[in-house]
Length: 113
Length: 111
Image (cartoon, rainbow over all chains, first blue to last red; front, side, top):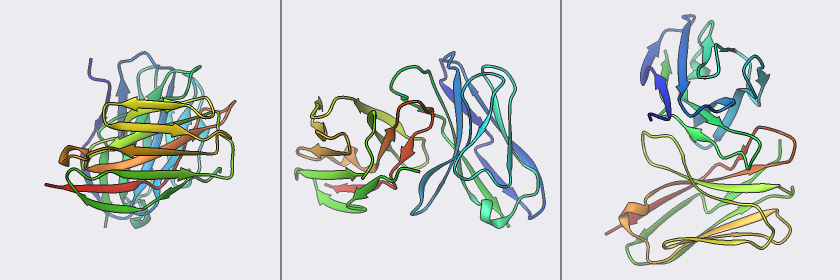
């Protein structure tokens, strides 16, 4: 039982390049989330998927797209990376209804030069 | 976005000391959670509090939810170096799936 897994763990991109961050969970959770974490800013929600087939914008969606590939997998795509997207990205999953406890992956540290 | 203010932002103490971390908001939450995050890892859930006035204990950690469900505190007794990390509070409001996270309290416990 791996929980939430993310790939890659580290990535360096040049401005304008694209990439996809992958996330998978094996807890049979319906809801999945993408956050970014920046120093002094806490965790900010980028996009979430309440259930398979649905996605919704969070607090900071600009510059990102997501795909809920199936119940297990939720990917985050940067179409044209910018230095402002340098951050640590976390994927999480949860099972509503309930108290919205979220289980996080280990994160992807992305640097855009 | 319902803001959660955490204080203090940083805390450096010696092993054996007690400490309290606060999480405050002007909004009411249906539940509030505390997470701990160690360097290079994702946050891990410590506890969820749901009822106003609720107190939960997890070994040396005591969590309290305010009567009005707008604030919470985390008290650590006899801190140990293994308690070092970033402590995050997160609030949920009814009807939504997203959590609102505070910016965290960074705790360093030195031997």
